[in-house]
Image 1: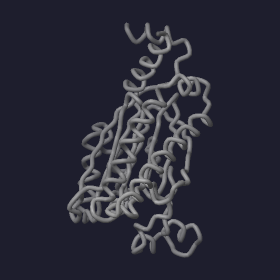
Image 2 (image 1 turned 30 degrees about the horizontal axis):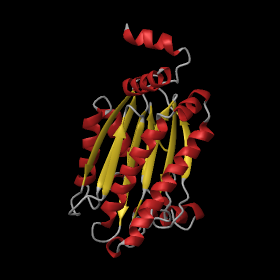
Image 3 (image 1 turned 60 degrees about the vertical axis):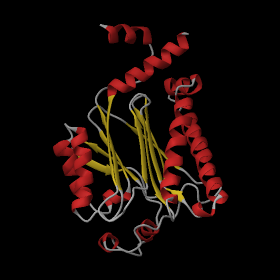
Length: 285
C-alpha cells in the first residue's frame, strides 16, 4: 500500500512540474498523416514516430510503435524496480529498460510487416523522452529530432541517422549544400525494418524553464533552426500556441511532409523525493 501511494505521489509531482503541448498536421501536400504522437505529463513521457511505407503502412508502423511503447513503458515506469532506480540515479537500469521496450516494439512492427504484403517494408522513426529526477533520458532511431531551449541557447540534442548526416559527418557536403540536398528523407536506421534495431540513448540534465521540442522532419526540413528558436522564445509562455505556430510555419513554407511537434516545458523541480512524507505534507498545504 505504501509503495502504491509512493508511485501515485511521484506521478503527481511529475504532472505538476511538466507542461506539455502537442500539434500534428498532414501538411499541404500529403493526403494523410503518417506521424504518430503520445505525451503524458503524469508519466513524464513523450513519444513521436514518423512512419514510412506504401499504402497506409507508414501510418500503421508509427501507430503501432507509439501505442505499444506508451502501454509498455507506463507499466515499466510505475514499477517499483524503476522507481528505485530513479531515486538512486541509476541511469544504466533506466536506459536498459528503454532499449528493451523499444526492441520489443521494433520486433512487433517487423513481424507485422512480414505477415502482410500490404505492409512489406514499412517502418518508422522514433524519438522518445522520459523525464525523471530532474533528468531526461532520450532514445531515438532515424531522423526525428529533439531540441532543448535553455535561456537563449537552442541546441539539437539528437544526431540524425540519415544518409545526409553521414555525408555531413564525413565532410562530403557542406551545411549549405545539405539544405538543398535531395537525400533529406533517406534514413539509415528505422524501427521495424530489421528484427533488431540499434537505439541511440542519451541523458541530459533538466532545469526549471527549459523547453524541450520533439519533432518529425516535416518541421526542421521546412523551418530553419533559428526560426524555430525564435518562435519558442517568443511564444514559450503559451505552449500550445507555440506548438501550433511551429506547425503553421512549416505549412506556410510549403508543408511538403507531415509535421508533428511535442513541446515540454519544465515548470518546477521534479527530483525523486527522499523524505517523501514531508513532500506529501507540503503538497497538501
